[in-house]
Structure formats: structure tokens, C-alpha cells
Amino acid sequence: MRIAYYPDTDSMYLDLSSRKSSESTEVTPGVVLDYDEDGNLVGIDIDNASKIMDLKELVLSKLLVNTQIFAA
Image (cartoon, rainbow, N blue to C red; front, top):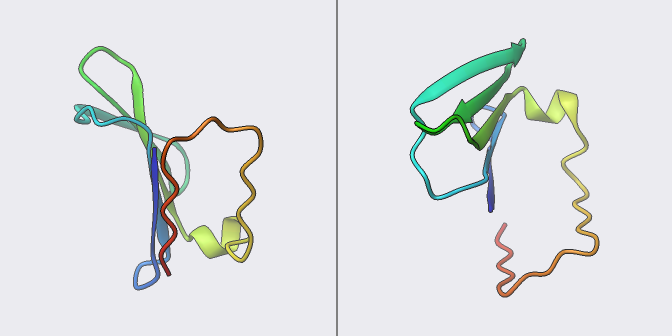
């Protein structure tokens, strides 16, 4: 899983899978869910991210991870 924030557009993308998106659905204004060809959720696009969530803090709990990469 990858999380990317784009300050120039104030958008955030949560890439949940390496599979390609083939369909998208806007579930609420500014929040789009991306699905692969089998209907599995592969990504979440959030517009106006700084207005929806606190971007100053990221808390990861009880995740089993092999790699941790942090970049500003």
C-alpha cells in the first residue's frame, strides 16, 4: 500500500494494490474509489485532503510491514 499527497492539488491517493484501475465511482463529493476489472477496490482518491483530514499526523497501528519508507 502506498499513500501519496500532492500539495499542489491538495489531493491524496491511497494505492491499495498494484492492480490497474478499470472503473471509478465517486462515493461522496471529492472521494473516488477505484476498482480493478474484477471489482476489487484498488485505490482511493481524496480531493481537498487537508480540509477532510489532519495531514500533520499519521498513526499506523498493529500493521505487519516488511518495509517502511518515509519521505517528506
